[in-house]
Length: 98
Ligand SMILES: [Zn+2]
Image (tube, rainbow, N blue to C red):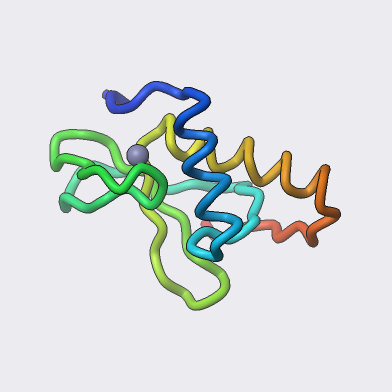
């Protein structure tokens, strides 16, 4: 079940900060992998994604690394990517990885 943080202005603010400082790319997801499994820290809120929760994974196309999210954190990041593109004219990266 996709439990975890709820989408909020705080999560959007964290996602925005991580885009601005380069920890997260500006990327629009076409495909996202969702799995149970290995515990990891979320790329937005930095809190653990417990093994019994669904984690949402994206490839960081800048370096091939993994970006892992709670559902709400992924939504916050995507909303901030759209906002960033709308306000900064940033180049859109389309992720089509299966
Ligand atoms: Zn999170």
